[in-house]
Amino acid sequence: MAEQKSGEGRSLRTSVKGPLMFSAFWAVLAFFAVLIFASGGTAKEPRFDLAFTGAGIAFIATLVLAAMLSMSYKDNAEHLGKGSGVNLSSRRPTPPRSSRAPQPGPDAETGGDIR
Image (cartoon, rainbow, N blue to C red; front, side, top):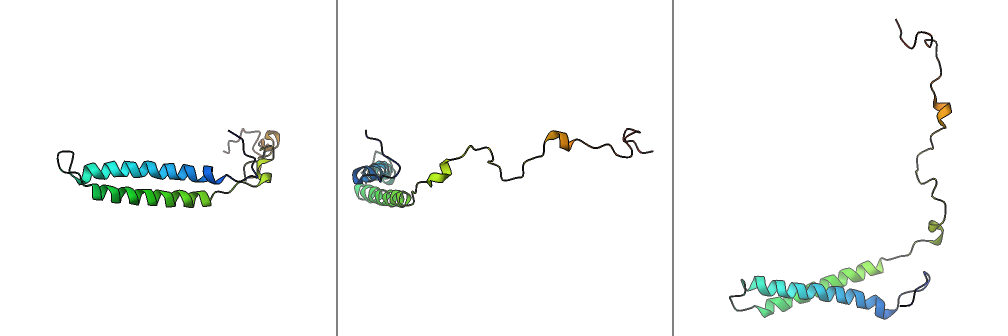
């Protein structure tokens, strides 16, 4: 299979085949589910009219959902993938440990105990 460069678009066949197969899978699943549950099990006469209606609704709904999701797809900008990743946090960097050490105050001789 040929690799695609990030600037190239997908071909019509590859962009349509996936959503159609996805929708067909859910339509077949809905067909059998409605066929079994609408007729009350396998002992009674099957309701093909409801099964085809359920399959059609499932096919159209999932196809519309897949089309909406594929239209909202957008590649990231090229500059977002560059950088070392060192400063990923938005908070300020903490100062070095030596400058954070507590400074001796007026009560340093008594060990911090005020009496």
